[in-house]
Length: 440
Image 1 (cartoon, rainbow, N blue to C red):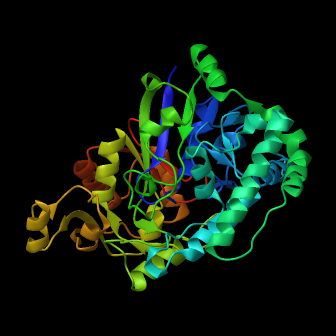
Image 2 (cartoon, rainbow, N blue to C red; image 1 turned 90 degrees about the horizontal axis):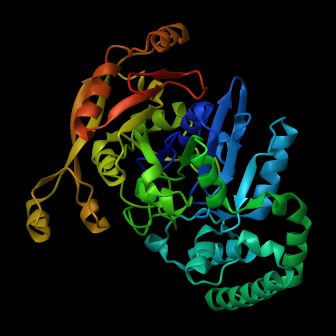
């Protein structure tokens, strides 16, 4: 068998957790390949809601290995709590594996995150979640990080923790105050977790490649979204890792020749959290409706999300950059009260800006620089809405594998504009509230 890669096409929060859980029914392993507990994936099974932050979404499916991959950063205290919470709710975590190459978030990373963000002036703030993700990745790239495998080597672990506390204390002091960290306290807290974490620590690439050699099916689950990617996102308002298909290989240890299917997840509208330009943002009653009806508040932070019309310039670029062949469209029910819906298909640029940048006045690809993005104005297509449907009407469409009138035209426009097939359409948070179209 081969691998499926699933990732977000927007600014995160697209509903990847639900789609991962749905697809996990046919998988032997689900692997998170980047990010940390700044990402929140929500899964609804019947009347029960699960909010996951670092454990892969496949954990809810019995018998599916849930692997936290090489490219992740793991807060061991958050992971320990999440595992215990799942067990208390009757979900077995015996199949949860932590890559021994994954880096660990220390208490001083969280404090560094807070102090660094506070030191940025006004508009230069990036809107970090304060979970220590960025500083942990900084240590990784600076080759001073602590990896999960270090838990097995007490002397090395102590040396690294002492150096990390010393360096972080100096940086925090320079940026805002006399903050110091006690390495003995950190080490003591780490040792208290070892019984739950060390037995789960494995050579994840070896495990996964052995599974693939035996014919297993593996789903690679991305966190955040394409436009939070450190390379191609709206820099500097991005996350600290790569959210792309390419990093699915680097962050899991699985060679790209195994990748058979790439699925992008997109909301039927657009949202983002934090700072940065947002061409289709709506600061009116429609945007407020999207926020309230769609319950657009962060799973991890509870921050309200900014909302706007579906932006196909975003989705089109995601499709091209990530070799996405299929799309899962979520939250279509949120727009069902609208008689008309708008979709951005292109951006318009002022002539002077276009000439300065060597571009046409109408562009179809997402700009690489924020200053250029700030001057982009969305060009909209207006379509007829699909109206409110009862639960029974949605269920009839799900059973038939068909779309309501109006939504079928919306989906057709998306497919024509981005050149990817919409194979899943979600109309609610539950597993069963999904229409599977041809090709899925």
